[in-house]
Length: 143
Image (cartoon, rainbow, N blue to C red; front, side, top):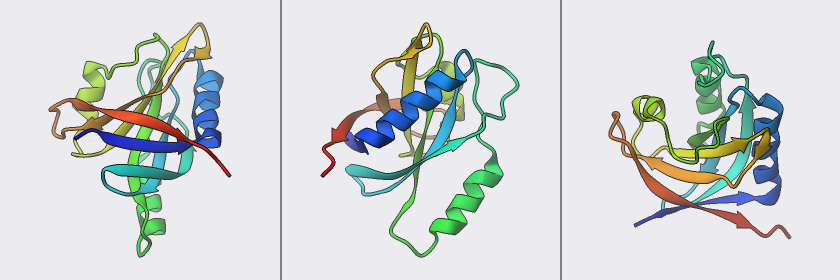
């Protein structure tokens, strides 16, 4: 069964704006949310890319720990992460697959073409370098 990732328009716009601001480097951030087969993103947290290379990303582990502590005792958790691909690719790279060690973690990828963000693609990690399954990205209507 394909997992659905629900983002608000504002969250989608935040992610794409971060990707455009970081270009030609990759941007990255955390996705906070809840749910199982339908995962609703409740917060998008932009994080400074700690990678030394422009075509890689690295989220500070301390930032992740801080958010895990902050979310303890709530119905929310870190459901995944997002990053951009300045080369325009929408699929996870081999480097992404190596980093995807947490099973069920969601990955959103923003393809960039000449500094302009394309449509966000969603994936779910199979864990331990096993690759990804597709996940559909749904933009929720805001009321």
